[in-house]
Amino acid sequence: KAGVTQTPRYLIKTRGQQVTLSCSPISGHRSVSWYQQTPGQGLQFLFEYFSETQRNKGNFPGRFSGRQFSNSRSEMNVSTLELGDSALYLCASSLARDSHEQYFGPGTRLTVT
Amino acid sequence: GIQVEQSPPDLILQEGANSTLRCNFSDSVNNLQWFHQNPWGQLINLFYIPSGTKQNGRLSATTVATERYSLLYISSSQTTDSGVYFCAVSSNKLIFGTGTLLAVQP
Image 1 (cartoon, one colour):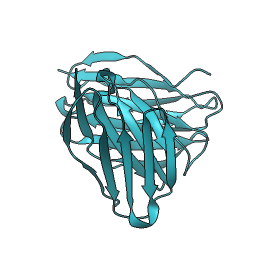
Image 2 (cartoon, one colour):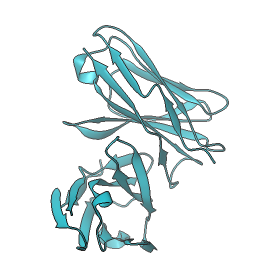
Image 3 (spheres, one colour):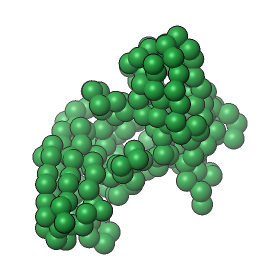
Image 4 (cartoon, chains in turn yellow, purple):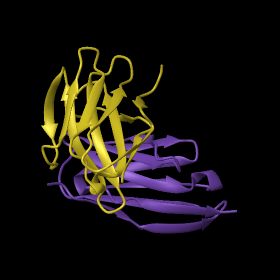
């Protein structure tokens, strides 16, 4: 069974631009969560989608948004990029919500210049 | 919110040595996972262990949920074990500790 895939793997953007990252979960998994990893803040939860609905959201500004499609694939969007948005963005999928093991993709490394 | 603390923050071992990594969490959780982050950033699942003991080769883990801690044991360490080890707990989202940076020297 294929693992979680994320595209693109690397991305360079300039301040003020917007970016869209994509995540395809493991086949059969319905929950997709997104995390941001930075050297200063560590790994932080962004949001979770299940059945095309955002179920949970972390403490991030409204510039960070996401969605989930009927095939469980998910996208996250960051608008008006700031230098501090430079990070590794990780997507995780699980069979269902709560108490289920999460499996991570390889991540998208975003650099904002 | 739930706080997750990992110790030690850094660990240097000689190849062949054993080690124990600890994860303390501040509240009841229904999910606990251990991950190894490889040099390219991917989080590799080691254990899903909300309670009890599990073993996988040279690695084993124990979670004592009533006392709010988990331990990851690495035996006969190899250079390929180097990297950052994270503990993460969840009620409805994964909350990560700050990790243990392990360096195994040949």
